[in-house]
Length: 155
Image 1 (cartoon, rainbow, N blue to C red):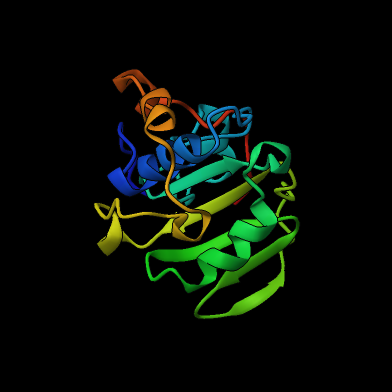
Image 2: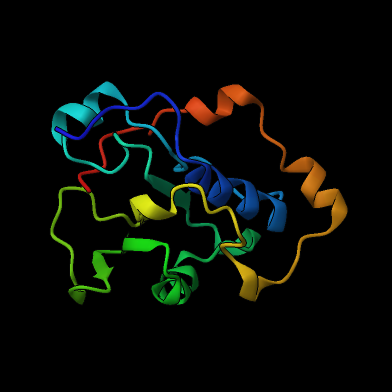
């Protein structure tokens, strides 16, 4: 079992904050940082346990298209692996079918390399900079950092 942490990594938190700054009206129903008890039981080796994973809700109508983000983040050196829409990608193994119990159709799973856990530089640089108003709306309370992954993901 991966070590359980109580706070997600700064890099994982930055993904959600930056996505909200870019698309303040985006849906967040499938967002997640830390695992629920059910998720831990189903997948004790999940990167969510170590705070090195983030789930980002797929909401193309509001500006967060996980199909595009999946493709773009393949070139981000902080990414260990990505899962979206029954596909998994890693630099080590390339892209292939994902056969876990959760197909990740409603969200993109981003696993972050441990050595990059504190890197909060822009995750979505190709999408442009958010407006100042959007940045203000995207601020999270400290308790939001501890938000559980809403359901078992199988990643």
